[in-house]
Amino acid sequence: MSNLKFGANGDDYPEAAAKHLTDARTLLDAKRFDGAAYLAGFAIECSLRTVVMVGHMMKLLNEELAEAKRPPVPLARALKPGSRALDFKSVARNEAQTHGRDHDLADLAAATTGYKDVLSEGAVRYVPTVDMTRLPFRDLQKFTNIRYRGNGSVLSEDAAKWLEEACALYDASVGLMRRDGLVK
Image (cartoon, rainbow, N blue to C red):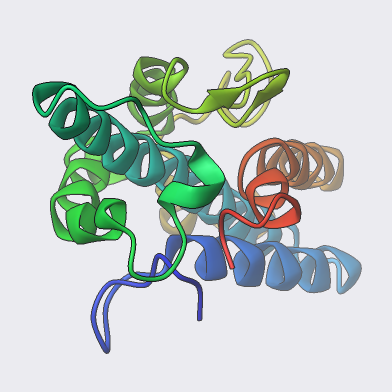
């Protein structure tokens, strides 16, 4: 369970992203390429939703601090237990759910760019670069359509590329936030 989990049975995007990556890797190893690509898509979605959620919490906190004529709080301090930023978790979760309706990864990726300023400290940037010309974004922005196709509709090379992209995106966002202690 991460510090971003919402409610007792609510969303926990960072944990879900990690689990989907692990499961996608297992399915790829088992040569179940459709399932691997499908779960890689969910890993990407959960990683991007984490970025939107953390970005929105920081944006709301910074706006509140600016109104009180107080300086912004560093990210590492803002996400510690008991922090005011975590009070915005509900609103931030709703914001994360507003983007990428129907699992539209392109829309969700575009939403993350609005948080580049609040999610950067020094040289560290937590908003990943999404290349819309690469898989999975290039061919299937709504990756959930895979489940409606016949078995074997995703080639092994494509599933491997999806998983590679999902891992890179996770590492550049949630993974980096975890390493820096922002997401626990």
